Image (cartoon, rainbow, N blue to C red):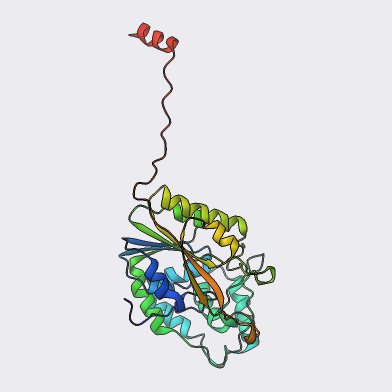
Length: 300
């Protein structure tokens, strides 16, 4: 039973802070939690596993996490310098955004990523097709500097390994005794609601299908439980056919029009591990030909 919930230090569209109790209730015990789409890390921060493998295709996100894990005091000290009234102006924001897109310094990029996250519009993390961060200025009165949340994340991250890989490769690292939680970019409710550009590449139907296939295979063939979050749609129910479903209703906060921020139906699809996983068939050795046997006899 969870008590006080721990907030992520990043603002994140689609973050799971409000749903962590429901997600934790569906996650079985395991020696390691694997998240192929870690995002802001709310599930990581509010569960108690011995080890974590936390992945995201967004290299800037993982870069920041690794620096915060390795040198939290320096990252917090240097990031704080950007949270000033002068830097909370539109022209200054766009100037720093341009610096972020132009720098090759990983550490400076990590510190600026936190600044952009807290000063940009509504917790969005969006990139152009050329890979440039392009979220507009957020116009907040005084952006919050999340020191306490960063310290908690840094402490807990000592149990975690952070990777920046395609989700398929993360599934290949899962072993029996692990559990996988997936929070992929959601299947769009409508054509105009499609937002999948958390990294430079989008996450379309083919990727949704591939993820569902990997979840089925992990549970049925490899004995590894998998839990997936997504919109509750006919297409997702079809993709996750055979899973155990839990239905949720979640408030949305991305729409610019507050009146349009209506609850959205979500689904948790749990793929339980098969007790006796199907072992892959081994190829039978071809019987030696009569000629081969004759040759062996001749040589001996």
